[in-house]
Image (tube, rainbow, N blue to C red; front, side, top):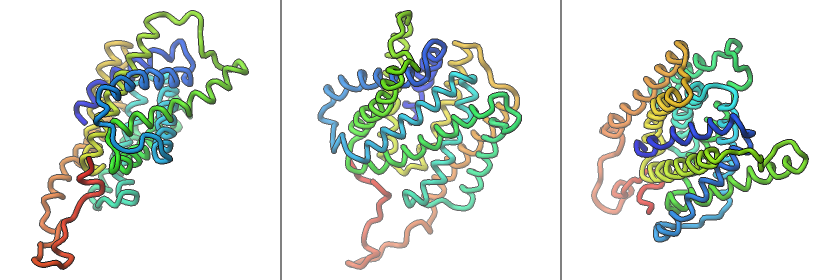
Length: 310
C-alpha cells in the first residue's frame, strides 16, 4: 500500500492538468484508455499471474464503481484545488473501516467507531457545508469516496478467487466501457468534444502518464487488499495526502487554507489511531478461543475472509 501511494499523486496531477482543456468526462475516458493501454502489456508479460475470471458480474460492478469514482473526482479537480478535493476524498478510509463490519464481517469496536466519527468531523471541517466557496461541488469528492470504498470491498471479495492483476484488468475494461458509451452519445449531439483539434502533444503525454501511474497504483492496491483484512491497509492511503499536496504545490502553486489543514490533521490523526489499534486488537488474548485437542470445532483454524487466496 505504501508503494501504491507513491505514483498515485503524480497521476492525479496529470489528470488535474487535463481538466483545463478537456471536459471531465473526456479526461476520465482518456485516463481509463491510457490505464488500459499500460495494463495490457503488463498482463501479457505477467500472464502467469492472471488467475480467475477477468470478466464477470462482480468485476462489472467494480468497473462501474471505478468509473463513478474517477468521473466525480476529476470533475471536482476541474472546479476546486486538487489538494482540497483529495482532503475531502480522504474520509474514504474511515468509511471503509465503518463498512468493513457489515459487509465483510470484520470486527469494528467502539473505539474504532469513535475514531471514524472524529475523522468524519475533520472531513466536515474541510467541506464546510454552507460556508465553502465550492457549493455543491464539495460533495463530488464525497461521492467519489463512497464509490471508492464500495469498490475496495468488491475488490476484497473478488480477490478471494482472482489475482490483483486480473481484477484490475477486468475492472479497467468495464470502467472504460461505462464511460465511453455515454461520452460517445454526448459527442454525437455536440455536448462534448472527444477529438479536440488543438490538443497539444504534452496533453497526450499527460493522458499516458495518468494511466501508467494509476495502473501501477491500482494493481498494488488490489494486492494489498488481497493479502489482509480491508481495515488494515486503508490508513496507509493517507500517505497520498502528503504526496498530492507536494505535487500540486510544485506544479500548480495551490496550498490548502488553515481550516483545510486543520481538517486534514484531524483525518490523519483518526487514521493513525485506527492503524495503531490493529496490532493491539490482533494481539488481544480474547480474539481467539484457546485451541482444543481432538476433532471438535475448537480444533479448526480460523481464517480472515479471503485469507490464503493466491
